[in-house]
Length: 85
Image 1: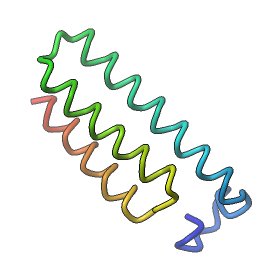
Image 2 (image 1 turned 180 degrees about the vertical axis):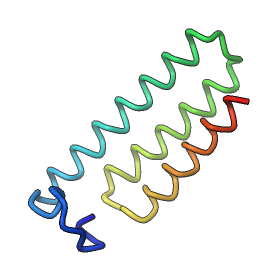
Image 3 (image 1 turned 45 degrees about the horizontal axis):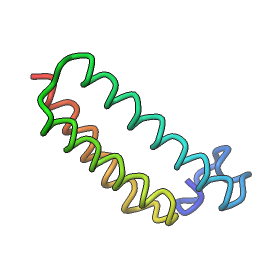
């Protein structure tokens, strides 16, 4: 949001605060996805795939690369959607 000059709360936060918030969101999301797939009894390759996608999102969130983070989050969401069928 900061890079795109959207008028959101992200505009009022520092770069460090944005990075910490995005990183915390990635960690929380990854934990919830892995817990959900574990409870469903999903195959281990699916857990590894979503763990790797979560770590990739965390890496780009920590580096502050908003464009790459957005792209990888879309890939992660698409893989979650595809996994439902």
